[in-house]
Length: 216
Image 1 (spheres, rainbow, N blue to C red):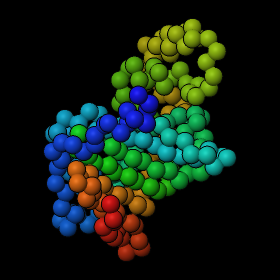
Image 2: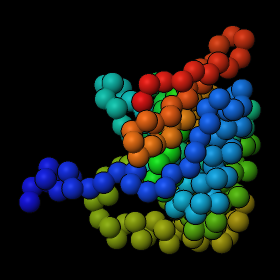
Image 3: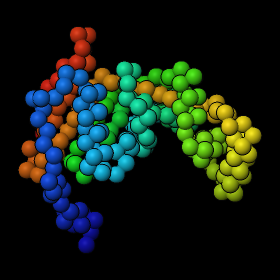
């Protein structure tokens, strides 16, 4: 069987899915996202805080990777990255980015597009120190996205970082940065087994948020 044939045997949305009444949605997207996230947690969606961050490199080529959502506040959707790694370098060159969530168990997507900026160093430091010790050690090793010529070097770097944390529990990785994406557009997508998907897009304007239904 070819991959094409195999893919055609797989079914999608062939399960009970939640109802989404777009007519009763709130006036701004953050409230609806909070509601959907809570419903995803209640439905035991696996890792609902995992999202895909999409950026572009200096040559205009798209890049995407999975990161964790850290918070949603007045300034937007927050995530972290090394300022000197690939994500940080791409955002420094072009601060436009997109976030996407897919909650498979519910057939739901959330898509966010907007401009990214770095939070204050104090906010990044506080977030860093709020992580588990293992995460802090990994971030202190640094050199993210660079070539690893010898795997043993990674083990040595982890051991050295572990010693540094043991000697100074308040140590902060200098390149660890909290970024926030201020959304210009947020789309909520509810799948339907009859392909009558419900799509609601919020777009920011001078007067605030406007919402509109989209064709599936």
